[in-house]
Image (cartoon, rainbow, N blue to C red; front, side, top):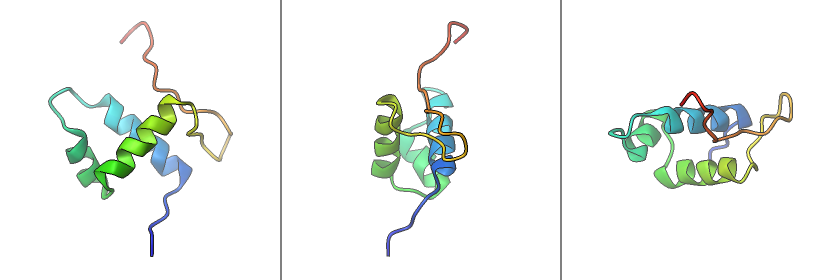
Length: 69
């Protein structure tokens, strides 16, 4: 049976992956979260296409960095 993850978990996973230093591999982030590397890649792609949103408020996840980054 496939594991199902909440939208909030997916958003947090993407935020964690994108906030890591360049020397931290996505494979390591996925392993730390207990998910597959390809799953994390898919969630990041969804977020970049603005297709990953939280159920709580319906707001879209953004992967764009602000001017302070």
